[in-house]
Image (tube, rainbow, N blue to C red; front, side, top):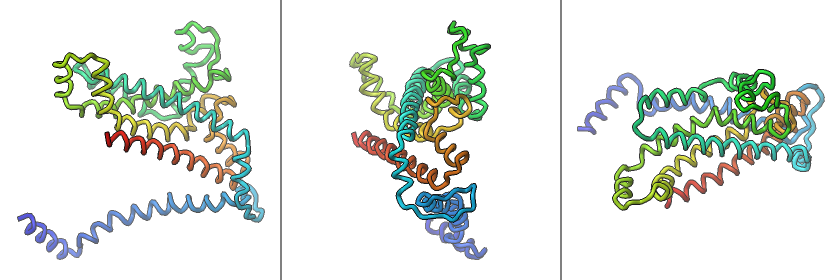
Length: 299
């Protein structure tokens, strides 16, 4: 019967002049064209520029310099300092998001009053604009009238101008905004854990810590690693919050350095090379995560 129905559908489609292959191409070809025009072509074009001394602000002839841009960038201590700041930000931000987000998911993974409303309210920060969030938290950190100093009794302490605290202040904002994302994925993983495993653990009188480390965490680990992968990639290329909230050198991440090099110093060829270095680093980190994720799934 299924074969007959498929044959009738193919006959009707053919009668209208639309075969299955044609219908498939109608949906696939525009997507492929979009990817080529807006993703692949700019990627290859910028790769070519990374081997030149091209500057978009002048009309001078473009000279091929080979790997010179890459060598100079990799030997530049300022670039390595930017990468160090970025690594610190990623560790603090993503680590905080995982702890807070997974903790909230554990609290919400039970029967509580107004669970749907509470979950919706907790998801609101990630739905807001990065610029709005940055300006909002900049006001909260203000040394004159900011509510954070008032609540902590810190007087006129300036979080965003302090070179030792500026990066952590921006990271706290990022944690507040994106911990709900980790919470959402963790909730999905927790809801998929079979209840009979907890019932068996209760019958065996297993403790809370034993149940968490032997049942909950191993089963939720794959989806938690996926959340870490997404958030690490986003945190590594984070630009909006550090740029809006603080102008300290201690918060100059590699994305901000790339922006200045490309659109303030107009070193187009060199900035293209830096962009590819960042891409390679992100791909390498992601590959490590994916390999670990595959090992976790095989257990």
